[in-house]
Length: 96
Image (cartoon, rainbow, N blue to C red; front, side):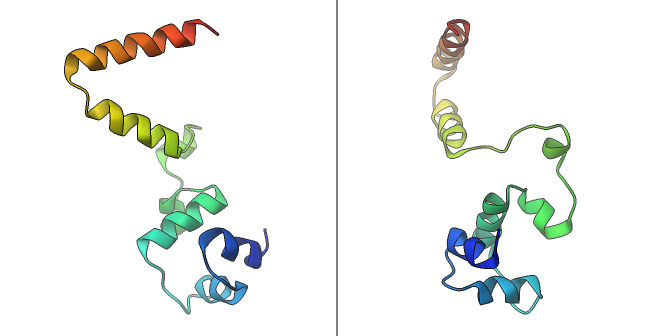
């Protein structure tokens, strides 16, 4: 991926912004770190210290926006409804 393609994916207008970040001439905030990690398919921790997370080492896929939405919805359910949701998901999986 070119610097220009990366810049466009994360919301910069030009490749020079990405170049300055790569050279350490420009700092970025947490939101941009997350955007970089998603665009590059790595964890934010990997970008910050070069160390893969345990999830990555164990081949656990990164959470998608749908995963996050599901977790948020599930966490707001009362306990009884959580069990019903789990049972329904198991049912859906058994249909494949």
